[in-house]
Image (tube, rainbow, N blue to C red; front, side, top):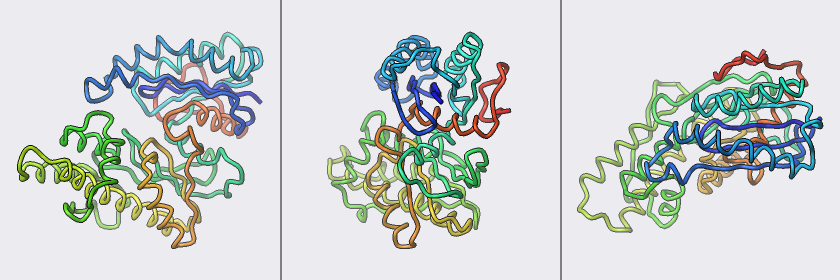
Length: 333
């Protein structure tokens, strides 16, 4: 079964063709990141206009690389949400139009669930159930995953997302946008013990996250330091901030696995490109004889292969969407 995936939740325009939920025949991504960089963040209007410009060329390239025609597509899966409404509307509208014109079914896919499914698009994945953690620029959440169509959110951030906190700390330090890679690069050369930032606190016993406080703590620390900041000071600030964030993510993920008696953790979202986070999670979970899975190379950031892969399995479970489907996180019929 050939599934065409369409992803347009933020600033990436992506299309992919996946066979039977696993075999990626093509995975094409165009990004408008450079257009947003000058503003220090994603501008929704720019993102949605970019999707309008790029969707058809990206779609045609995905079909060409898969060596398939529209007639050979059996199902269309498109990101329904969460994401930027204008951006989502472009991809979802294209999916509906193709579905109507070609008389083939389509299905709306939850963007966060797709990030978690990406971890299973590799040989020999463990069996359900899992705990899942999505860590990205717009989302930080934990999920209980009993099956591909039975995913329940069990915790989320109460304020800033993890990736958002990285971007804001980078802005405080004058490192540019996107901030995650810049903070990580400097943290590698920094001393995490020089500046210690308190771990975020939420309600006692809660698995929810909070990253607004640590970002503010960095801001106040910078205000107390002599200016201009030396490169060494910036490195140490980044290292201290990153260590606290990684400890928080690791602690919450491990506690969720303990509570739900899960033997494996799936981790998705753009922030997992951070190598220090990956290494910390692997180290913690090995000590507890639990497994942690990351997406294969190329599937960590927003992409359409994960959307097509998950869409295939949802369709096999008997789910599909109608042409009146709106751009909301839920709504698969």
